[in-house]
Amino acid sequence: MKYAIILSSLLTSFVIAKENTSQIKVDGMVCSYSCGGKVTNIVQKIDGVKDCSIDFKTGIATVVYDDKKVDDKMIVNNLIKNTSYKAKVMEGCDSKKKLEKI
Image 1 (spheres, rainbow, N blue to C red):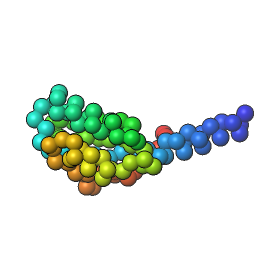
Image 2 (image 1 turned 90 degrees about the horizontal axis):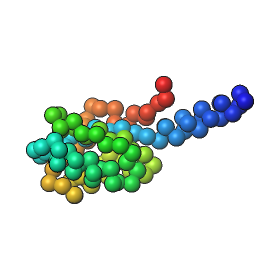
Image 3 (image 1 turned 90 degrees about the vertical axis):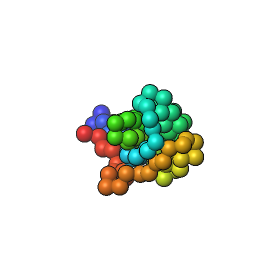
């Protein structure tokens, strides 16, 4: 039983360790509902993206993704390609920080 718990913890840590969170500054959104929704829909359709939330007031999209499938630059390029918005990865944020189980 003890080994099963340890193995389960290791496997869970391995799965969680693949996730990264990046903050992407999105300029050009004029409304929270359709513009924010458009950004969220486009980002969440990218293979490897697990979650996307928009803070319309700051113009920042927080994206959780699997770094084995996609990186933050690919997400930004996809946003620029599929919208009229300007986007860039926020500098100074821990965009490469791995999520850890507490």
